[in-house]
Image 1: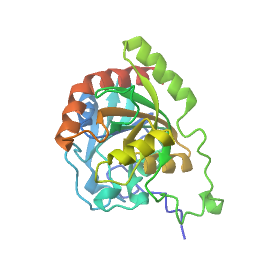
Image 2: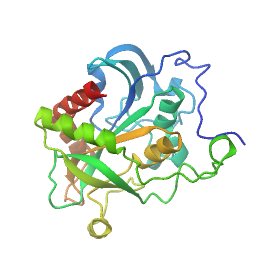
Image 3: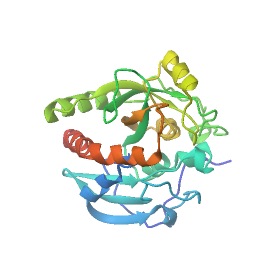
Image 4: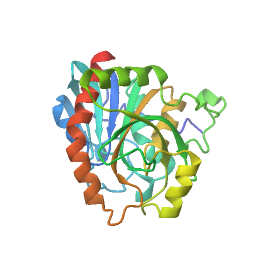
Length: 268
């Protein structure tokens, strides 16, 4: 059995591409940041190896853009794969696996989420300090470890402390309020019940969503440094919650998250 996390880009449109300094996964409603990039290459996900044929969710453009943003060469995933679409945890970790195959050392993950903690409001940006994996699975299941080593990956520093310090400095520079919080990853696609939100609050979660966790686990297994942001699109278990609301809040907050991302990239 080979290393199941590895993706071979040799016969793909990314063959021979020089490693970007950072990669960014853009969540629901946040794909507009990709339009800010001075693109040198744009590739639909479906043309890249390892991409599962599960379709695209509204608000996810489904393309990889490589180019320059804030003077830094980056790769931006305009969208992602979700387990609720029928993907396995390994397939949902696809952006992290492609990032590693590109030789890129840093992965920035973003997502739209529900607010769990009472101090949060729709439109807030949360810097992820840690996560709780409640998906019931893991992208490393069946993995033997790098080069036949052990598959036990430390997760105490999953969200890189040095990158988090850079994010806080950038937020101060841009006068952007940045909250700190724990992200709970659920399988979805149903939204959380009020009882589940109460449970998550007791368990120590500040925000909840249906992505990100498989990407971060795989990224750490592959030696990537990770920085994560959640955009609070709604308070979890709100009456009348809809995906259209999630996308609209994402669009309204995109300007602040774009400014913050640019300021972070300038500091890398």
